Length: 568
Image (cartoon, rainbow, N blue to C red):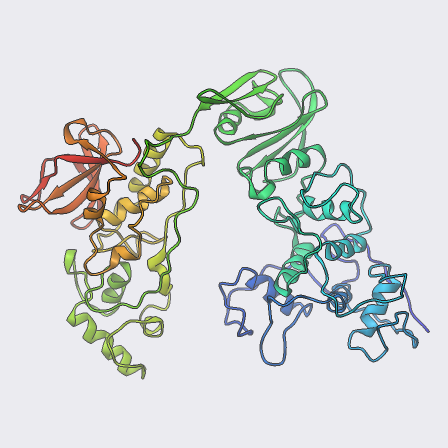
């Protein structure tokens, strides 16, 4: 048998020395070569990268089979390719009882054994090539080819005991963002890895984990970080590595790491503590650990009607988050998802109808922006031209020939919640108004509830305020963005009738209240938000704008006797 061992040291750029791989940007989203990996797949780009690099490919039938488990022999082949497919002659006699020399990945398996990466089971000299590789084993072999770096203190993991055989390898993978585990804190170490997740793992290993290239969260800072949920918690992802610093309050030396949602700071005398949410905002304004408060000396705690945290230089506190009265809509962490891409028929309204009419040269304003007979006939002409079923119904196929630059399911767009989980009533009102002002000038669109580009797809009066409530963390079900565009759906009337939105006499209106207008028969036909100081904002006429409050608009719309208060 002839063979040579390859050096498997990692360079500063995170590559295997001698590897043919390079740190690359993710490929642009082009037509997918795999019929079972749509472009909206969670790991689409990582799968395309793995294919481009020749690390992990699909089958002859143009499938990738992303949710199939990846086997131990397939993962051994990945590691061999990751090292640049080195020149290696496998032994004539197999070192494993269950791997013969005619097996597809025989050479790759033997190479892994000689490198000390995959060792198999010593008691029966088996490799078990067809066994799915577990999550703990996958990160362990990557840890080995990285040179088995020293691991300090390990952060607790609910389902990984302190004496677990691969405990330090799991800590290594978490501290670098290669494999972070589930939102509930579990790691599921013995669970098998799917092929798509394997592609993502290798991509992160080569190009940098979810924390960023060469960014780690380790030691006492890591313990405090994972104790509050890690990347799945309020702190979110790190914005760089930890920095050594000196407290201006005590003179203590320590370290601090910045995260999207706050900080973790540590000194020998204070220990490590997370600083999050509203307290983190105040802490940041004061200069964080190098400012007037110094290092945190305790975790955040609730005392009566406030949240407090102690620091070397004093306390920071903030009011208890908004809690609605019984029976009212309350704050949410996630807006109820809806399925978009509804086929567009006669009578339909909304942002997509506006786009169709603009694309087909049909001029419409106000309530005439509806899918009418003229629009239907123009759509039929497109369908004839492209040999589609001529039925006047805009489905995904017809949409691609009218407005391919926009997603067909844009009708399901919901603005992200932009307030902290524990936001106060005032913060939520401020966010509603901020959102409305951020889309001033967006075109008026009958039945429209906007899109991420407000210059493309605008709003009507109730669609604007539905999205404003979403932004402030309120989900006024059953109203939703898809139903909002239906022919006979009137969200403004739904809001006015909603008993879970507090009714308040008009004379008692306050900033953030919803003001309603009706026609001469009393039917609600318009809605605006009260900005205070005698002003309202609404989507009306040509666009979203601000104007002086009036009890009558357009000469024939009269203010209703009650306002609705989303955040009482």
